[in-house]
Image (tube, helix red, strand yellow):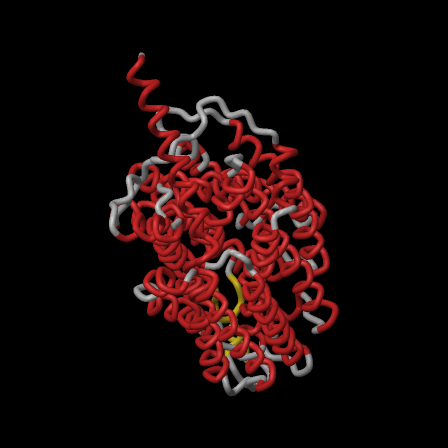
Length: 491
């Protein structure tokens, strides 16, 4: 009976919190703003540190490790702040889009200020890098936790959640692709020298990197404010939040769906971050920085192709089910890349294999944020406690753990295994070193995508298992909305 009831609700009766394309596009703008600043920092800040500021790879690795350890305090802190905040006339989560946008954008810009033009003192340069990067990380969490939580209160309609996740993926694609496609054409300049293979050597320009950071900062502010203007919170939040954070966090780690979600978050975000090492691969193995553009196309074009189909496939087969199949395809393509190991004169084979990975991963990427909302609903279903921001804060932290492993481990491998040092910034292809960079950039993705597939294989929130969760959540939200309406009418 429960299944028939839910099917009837999802197909025949209009959902009271149904949303349309317009609001999906509004939410899309927010994630585009996120990715303008995050992708540029994630993909090019390591190059800025090692090649412009001339910070040793070991020191950069330690910087990323320390800042992520601080996130163990910072992220739950933001989760508690957001959870305990009373909703205003603009809602519980939307106001952060307005108030955090400018400080976040400024912090991203400061990360790319070339302080070496002011001082050559290595310690001062390193301290400046620590301060600016920690500030960026704190402010990004202050934006991302409420922004991610916003999806669960815009609508509780499963179809609407998938719509929001799909549009968030589009927004992420726009914001992520912009720096990856455009920056390589602008931030590198020719030195007039040739490497061992007789190809032009290009180096990163500090002035152009900072100028591009300014463009990303301005775009982020504009898109955040547009998201604020075009979204609305429909699902009622508690007027007097009374959140037991200890109970909430303990409940999460006893939940199999949340634990698996957190582990996939570590791997997914870790692999996305690890892919930033491809900048060294393009620069010092294929000696063609423009390949970064085609690598980005290989990542995002499959996603663009799949966007019209994934919501329909998700509705028919389930989010977990199609993500599992996509993760399997990505794993096969990643393992093939490691086995084949394209040579420095075979860049297009490498790009073709990246396309295969992107095609499989696209289903995981498009449905990911809808899966997060499902886990939020499942926790509410099991505990009766609304914990959007707390769950999102811990999930954000899990993604940062993945980024930490990718940054710290990747840079350690780059320096200690491959032998990359600051002199490599001006050398292009160097036999031995460059070949080891290729090994690093192929073996880690092969392992990571295989583990993502295994986790989706055992993820318990199947389409069938989610039916009672949706029914419970919809009824609870309807009752909360009715109570709020009665309170307003009695005033």
